[in-house]
Image (cartoon, rainbow, N blue to C red; front, top):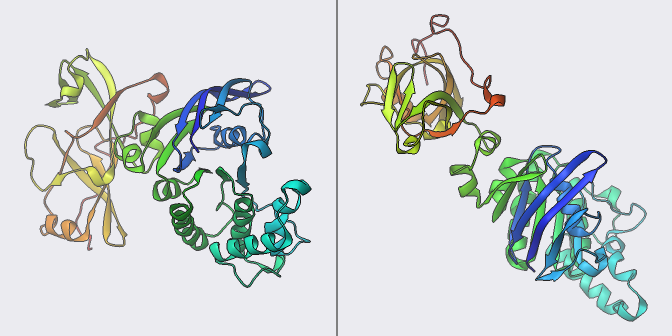
Length: 377
């Protein structure tokens, strides 16, 4: 079932939780609502479910206006972060609950209900545990029961609010992979809320990045990570380096450095910040032309097969990070006395807004004298 959200707004008192949200969720896709606390992602999920009433706008399911429909009429399955299981009921009865409370005319027979619950137990890999109670299950098992209960009513849409937030890291990782496989099997339109970037990028077909009640960007995990639409998305998704520059008529200026960039052809002495992720930075032991800048390595960290370098730009003292393979690191620093040069021509530029004026880290270029000497990897 496809979902269309058009011009939806919601406030709580004077706080604007959602501000004119527009979003298309294709049928059968697994979509992540990703953002910091207070960004409006859970409010949007609850509006889709019918658990909250919007102030303006419309929500359509397969083109049909669902704005005034109840949760039951929308046929949504909802899974909460903290399971919301009935402690006094067995696993079987928890899963069957949505079927048992249906009006008598729509309630399945006892045999049909038994078959349905056992099928769901096999689907969520809990067969044999139907007689246990929630208190006898692990956190991961309880969340699977909650998911099976949501699936029992055969929903058109499955909604999950921070489904793995209460679990430890290893269980979270296992359940993420399992849910991705389950979605591939069922192909139910699924929307889940998370603040975990890795979770969203690993699981989702589409990622909706939210901030302060607005949608910042919608795209595939690769699109939003590799081609962020604005500074917020760049900074929120993963690690990113920032360099303050000035763009003028096709040329980028950083202190005494200058290089050509078609991105700033129409700029007129515009102050900007250039963004680039640590793993995207090209480096060399020698300068290779315009846009290459000298830097000093302040600290080296091992990250499994990768090496992270914390560096300082010689030109203006900007601090930044590089990530490269251990082999590449050893190749570049056979002679530890060599200088490091980084290529700045791949930066993405965004004009500076007043709130960003103090966002760039700098140190006095004369205040740090650490070099690569003595570092072994």
